[in-house]
Image (cartoon, rainbow over all chains, first blue to last red; front, side, top):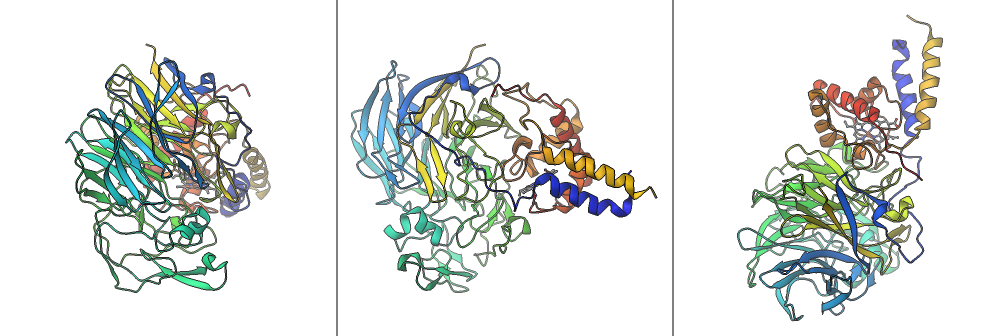
Length: 485
Length: 122
């Protein structure tokens, strides 16, 4: 037994020594790596459970984000056309032929990011995040004709228009991420690139809200760092908020989950209060689930330790952004970034007590596109297979070890998360980070129609430097995972 | 009361062990055999871990916080850290983490750590 009188000091010293102290250690994120092209992915570098097989379906893609198959089982992929790091390419819908050749079906000019695709009644539905002109939902015919089903989504900021998926009710579901990290436009948005483009852009709520009035003062990058400006929540940069100020809600809101008829028309708001609800999927029992990227430790209102979550959606509810993370209030001291103050509430009243998530995934891991297993032959029926893109530390905050670069499965009954496809290395992380030829940045996971094959879209190499994101073109990959027995 | 000298020796030895953090922190599927808790207490602890700890210590590996699986963390240390949150880690009160859940959590972490680590040729 330890001497009682020495116990507290002993424990404190032990733990401090052991942890090596969070505050003293440098960030060691998923993108803090080196890369020299070309990327040479190999299926053998990816570990899956016994009985499963990994194959490379396509390589050399530029920023792929989504996959779906048509009625003939032909594979289609969308390339984003835009990546963090302000790299604009051309968004494209591509068909991957059985021999691996690539046939372009449609291109999107200088818009993007195209964030996902669903084949529906003979056409392709594509979410167009369009950071230059506003987000849209597109319908693309097999001949490449593009019709706009929805436009004017508030997608000019940090997060974009995402989805879409077809619901069992015949509606098309899609989502919209928020303009900012935590409700306040600031220096971080200038660093991302968009604030200089869209100086008036800010978050918009999904229902009328009343502000607490808290505002944030900082430097003015738009004036070359000269002078200080004060910015309120849900307000343009350099516009303070007032206590009691009412901000009108709108269907095309920030952090919203929406649905629209497949032929177009006015969309409806299903739920809001998300941050970046990137992945949308219906479970075999018909329930709707969404993955949501948690807050970063950045900007005027940084939040520490906020998980990415998996929500089961109850229509009509508000899910907590910008005042709760994974169902807990941001005023709780656990969310206070080291050396900074706790975020206060931005809303004077909350629309409803926010729901609790089904699962809490790694902080900053970027839990993205996902799908449910619905075939006993593949196994794990009813579990969600989620592509984990991996952290973008240090931009999003400090991290002690890389997270992501893998596919996990989530038991939605217990909240237990199990790795499904990972790199064969002694630590987690993208291939370029852990020095193998496997998964880089999985961004979407989707089963084929009969549920026997899981397609994993791998965005490619995205490095992070102190200056921000450094995406690498022509490093995207499509993987396929099947079961042998 | 025991002699402080003994406590101090334990302290130094344990600290030295912990500071090392030797070997990979990876456990379970798909690199090693799947970790499926047989004991109901361990199974309960697993659910508590995924609800409360996994997002900062993913599967017991490093993430926002340090790795837990690759160092000999005695149960009392895990409990002390969870209750007091030394350093930047948040503290977990009885309300958020009742004593029986914390016990189950400690049993789970011990079982996970003791499960085979993957053999990785790198």
